[in-house]
Length: 190
Image 1 (cartoon, helix red, strand yellow):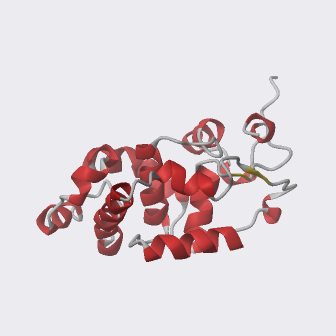
Image 2: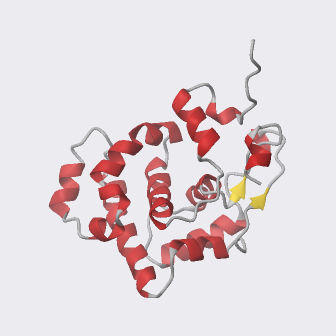
Image 3: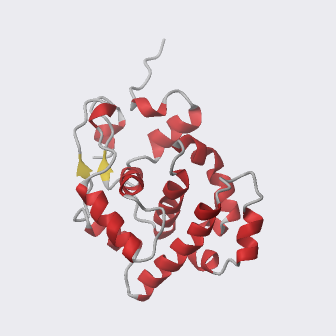
């Protein structure tokens, strides 16, 4: 019988979750559109489990113009109200309207000559923070750094960017390596 890979316990045995864990979570991301998508989707996850958003991610991509911020910024209230009727996404008015608000905030940053890649990665000097967590109990849910980023993002007009959401974003896009020490991905994403 083949030996199974040791993974972080949070992904369980759901194939979609395992694939996300194995191929995306914790991998340093520098693509602007993917960073914007991750920030929006982490906000959509607020109060829910990540698997809920992950199962709807393809619908979000389709309905929100593949996370093209310029297009989302032009969405009318009528278009957003129509999106709220689609069962393929989380139908929370504040979260759906928040995507447009975040697109506008992101475009304002771009006008100042700031990319999301520069912005986020400057907080960690361009290198992922390497945590050494033995179990998931050792993994923080937020940090002083996440609180500082959250505060600045809110000042810039972003929404659904509380410290816990920001920390989950940091984990997802590889700004911090929170794979547990015994997980096969821990050393791979260092």
